[in-house]
Structure formats: structure tokens, C-alpha cells
Image: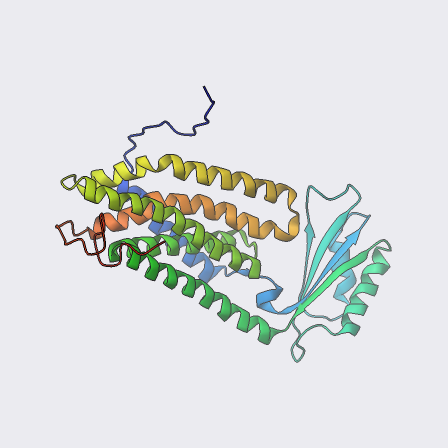
Length: 326
């Protein structure tokens, strides 16, 4: 007999609504705290959104942020942010730092002469230092990127809302989009609270989280629609619990395999993509949670029209758009 790994039993009877208002309240509180954090603490925008120049340094000698900052303080180059970069893949004698220089008034980016002065000052205190990369983004471009990023997330959410509304009912669409907003806002809030660098790669992660979360939600809603036809007299709350339990194995397996891959990337993928991978790791966890405890709660509160309707587009369809191919 072949061995089959199961992360959950074949049949479960978990009551996902037992703590309905506690879980829903916790989600609402998390969203509010995230918004407050973004308003008060703000986001630690990277050069993509803030504008300026980032110089990546590498040396065989240990990074001394204080010495670096003292060497640059006399250059009058404005606000300089210096941080050491850690990565388990680095060699023992590989010490990396990131130096960010904000855009100067009247200058789009740091001039070649300014960069040369900075490099010379650092070489004076660390002769072994090298400069693998220098990246510059002007403030006008960074402002455009902020609006483009916001529009991308809004457009993605709107597209998903339209798809789910056509595929199911408007109540499902509202529940799905509420869960997506929850996922995005809480993820952004974590970046604000921890002051992790927020750049274009994080926006890409947010869009990926939207896709992952809606995929998980649509699978459960699709089974729920089947059960609405199969169990016409079962109370909606019991039917939603039944549906969530029937798809729980798939939900847990998908989340687990995705987390395994992301964990490997987080550990071995290097510091360049670590912010993106962290956002994805958190997004998968919060996306799975919102599918089970946010989207379904919204649909339950809104209710569903379970009256018999003429089957316009085939067996099991409950409205005119239900048979659209996924």
C-alpha cells in the first residue's frame, strides 16, 4: 500500500465560526493598527520611491557604521543612511554595507563627482573596500513610481472583484475583496512597524499575494456553490463550515508547500530578494487566515439568496455568469 502524507485528517469537523467575532475583530484591529502605523511611522521607502543614490560596498574588513558615517560627515552630501547587510551565504571575510544618499535639492541624483568623493572618503578609512553597484533614482521618477504602484494594487483588486462577481455572486466578491484589502494593509503595516525597506519588489510581492489569496478563496467558494445546490435546507453557517473542512486539506497542503519554497529562498536566496520573500512569507500566512476567517465571515453577514432560480447556463449554475470558465 502506497504511503500518503496527510497534514490534516481525511475528515475534519472544525468550527471556524466558533470564535467568529473574536477572529473578525482581531482582523479589523490589525487593519486599523496597520493604518495608524503607516500614518504615524510611515514607510521606510527605498530609493525606488524616495529618490537618491544607493551605493553598495563590500570589504574583507568588518563594517564599522560609525567610522563610515564619520568619514562622510565632512563631505556635506545631505542625509546619509548606512546599514550593514547580513546574509548567511556571505563568506566569513565578506562584509557588505548599503549607503543611501537622499536626493539633493536642485539635483536629481548624486553627481559622478559626489559619488567619487564618497568612494574616496570610504577608501581612506577602509583600503579593502570595493563598490559592486551604484543605483540612482530621481525624485520625479520616484513620485511617479509611487502612484503607479498604488494604481497597480488598486487595478489588481478591481479586476479580481469583477472576476469573482461574474463567477459567483456579489456577496462573494465583497468578501473576497475585503479579505484582499485585509491582506495588503496588514502586510504593509508590518513593513511600517518593523521599518523594513519598501521598494518596487515589495509592490510585486503585494500583487503576488493578491493572486495567491484569491486563488485560495475561489477554491473554497467554488465548493460552497456546489454545496448550495447539494444541501438546499442546510443552514448557511453549517454549510460554510462543511465547505471549509472539505477543502482544508488542500488549503493546508498548498500553504505548506509554498512556505517551504519561500523559506528556502529566504535563507539561501540572498539579501537582494529577502524583502520580497519576507513579504511573500507573511502574505501566504495572512492570506490563508483571511480566506478562512475574513472572506467567509463577510459572506455570512451579507447572506445569500438561496431561493430556487431557473438554471440559465447549465447544471449547478446559480446565476447568469456562473458558468464562465475560470
